[in-house]
Structures are given as C-alpha cells and as structure tokens.
Image (cartoon, rainbow, N blue to C red; front, side, top):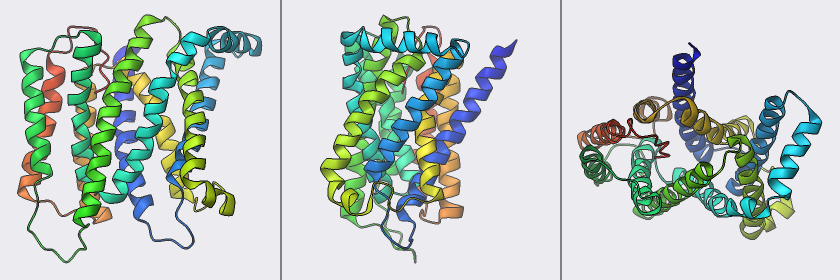
Length: 326
C-alpha cells in the first residue's frame, strides 16, 4: 500500500534536490558578495561530514536506537572487514573529484546548459555497465544514446545572438564543458563500480554510504589542503560561508541519500521523468530568475532530444532489475 506513495515521494524529492542543487550552486558561484568567495573544496568536505552523520543516524534508527548495536555494526563492517572497506576507496575518490568538478562547471556554465550536458552520464554509465557488469542494452536504449549525443551537441552549438547580457568567454565555456565531461565519465564509472559492490554484499546501503563518506572526507581534506591550503590557513575553511553556501552543502549531502531511496523505491522510468522535469525547471528558473541564460531554438531542440532520450533509455530497462545510476 505504501509502495506507490514512496515511489512518488522519492521522485518528488529527487526533482527538488537535483533542480535546487544546480540552481543554488550556480547562484552561489556567481553571487557578488563582500569578502572572499567560499572554497568549493571546503564545501565538498563539509557535505561529506553531513552525509556521514546522517547515515550514522539512519543506521542508529535501523537498529532500534541501540548504541551497542550501532557500535557493533560499524566495528564489524568497517574495522573487521578492511578489504571490503578499502574497495570503496576507489568510487569515493572519484566522487570527491566529481563533486569538485561540478563547482568548476557551474562557475563557468549557465545552469541550463550544465543540466542538459551533464546527462551525458547516461551514455558513460551505459558503456561502463556493458563493459564492467556484462549488461546488455536493447534497441531502444542504443537509440536513446544516439539521440542523447545529438541533443547535447545541439545544446552546445555556438550561438550568434548578441544580447545585452554579458556572455561567458570561450575559454570559460571550454573549462566548464571540460569539467562536465570529466564529471560524466567519473560519475559513470563510480556509479557502476558502487553498484557492483552493492550487489556483491547484503549490507545496508547506509553502512556502505558511511564507508564511502569516510574515504570521501579523507580525499576531500587532502584536496582542500593541496589546492586551497594557504587560503584555509589565512582565513579558515569556512571563509565566505553564508546561508546560500550552507544550502548548497546540505543539498549536496542530501544527493547521495536521495539516489539510494530512488534505487530502493522507484524505477528507471520514474528516475528518467525526474531528470527530465529537473532539466525543464532548471532552464525556466535560470532564464526567469537568475537571468544568466538566453535560450535559442537550437537549445530547445537539443533539450527536447535529451529529454526524449532520457525517457527512451529507461523504456527497456524496467523488466530487468537494473538500478542504473545514469
């Protein structure tokens, strides 16, 4: 009885999280404020801490709020199984890189272009699924990948429209596009690798997220000190933080938990619907509220193709138990 309700609840939360994260992250990276801008590497670290704490609370709840049971589970799964824990270092390091790249991308691209281009992760996830999991794709899915590539190419098509708004430079757009493409490949590989680990174990997804977050925290701290160490020592890791920054961090931490819920309660078609709806909302809000995006007919054609491809990719995926992270 509760299953349909949980499906649509997870769908709604995913749409909200995806759209809100893209728009608030873009706004936070372009907001003109007094003092230094917050460090993206610091935000990634704080998001990992919030994710770990949330997952610990969820495991605590799963074991009837027993501190003894929580301590036993964490000790058994993390300390007494070092090989299993170390397996998660690979996707964790890649996710940390990916999270930093998304800040770079949204500092150089408008929210709508980022959202549509980032759907190339459907292609990379499909390719890694075929090569790593031996998964077979149907005719509709291969067709959807071709449509997806055509759609993303149209979205990136250069525009000659010279509006009064200051357009980002070609170099800035190239940096943003490169960051999105690397993030797509890292998302595809890490997602399939993590899915493989989840299938090989029967442990709670929240425990796996704690293990993932622990490595993510270590990698994040290392990256922060390597790239922003001097600024952290001068002004602290929370320099430039405001309400918008904390909102971005909270939404980023929520992302992994939402994906876990969608994998558990929803399916590929609903997830594709959420992604498509998120693209539409991001485009509209980017145009009307942020006013950093001037859409063209070519962009709209590309966006429609991406949305069609997203639906089409999930069409044949439903019969097989395939919690695709695309």
